[in-house]
Amino acid sequence: MRGGLTVRVGPSDVGKRVSLRTLTEPGDPAGRFTDTVGVLTAWTEGALEVTRRDGSAVRLRESALVAGKVVPDTPARRRGLPAADVPELTAVAARAWPAAATERIGDWLVRAAGGWTRRANSACALGDTPPDLARVSAWYAARGLPPAFQLATGQELLAADLERRGWAASGHAVVQIAALAPLADREPVERVRVEGELTAAWLSGWPRAADAPGTAERVLAGGRTTLFALAPGAGARPAAVGRCVVDGRWAGFTAVRVDPAHRGTGLAREVMAALARAALDAGASAAHLQVETDNAAARTLYRSLGFADHHHYHYRSPAGADGR
Figure 1 (tube, rainbow, N blue to C red):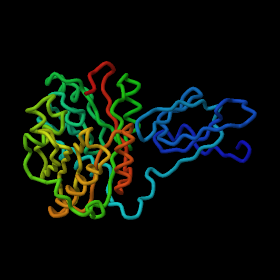
Figure 2: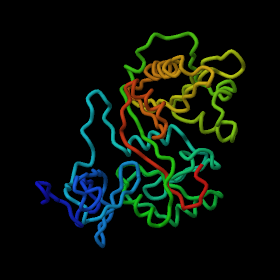
Figure 3: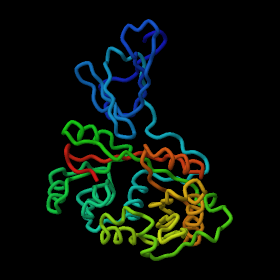
Figure 4: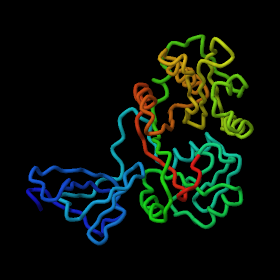
């Protein structure tokens, strides 16, 4: 105990989620502190390692530790949000962005799509068993791709292990969820139409598809019930596009883009609302999406539409590998 603060964690708590308070500088007369929350992934030779929900690692000196305790794995669910766990959302999201080639290796779904998008070229967990690194690496090597894992909140020990092996982190993102009905509660506008088929006009509004046209069309057109929203522009290119995949109770939103000339006009909200209404008609009741953590504008938009963070994920590949 230091000044009323208590340290209630130790090396035996490796693997548990903890909240730690450390002195910013040992002997600092001002007593400035830093708080760290995450999974305790190592405690050796006077040093601690904590891996946060987003996969980033923090190393702390044991001598700087002034308080610490084990905390619950997940925060309380916010009222009004759909109940879901990480494995369920991981599986639903994988089906909403189907890769050209997939295989289950143990509890991991390995996916490949010629290197087009990280989501379609990484292995994600469908269970609790650690991955067979040799088999997964061989599977990707046979397809001319670097091995890659999509690691979610709850897989901090694996993230720390891969970090020690020299696997670099990239593509930090957050999965957000929301109730679907409030999202749809906007007056329909004629400028946004929703169709069940992927068209050349829609593809022209999402430039990333041009990087690998055949693969992109296969991924984008996949999914159980796939909906495409389009708002025509003044010329050949749409003013905005969006995609939604209905899978049971879930409506998964992806590829929402507004042409730069039309941003700030509310089109993104109209596209989301139009897709939400169509998804409700298809039987969905809950919404999910994935957004990169550094995309502040998109996160602000989705928060204003009622989305809340559910869990984080990031990718791990051997250092130097192409992390597209």
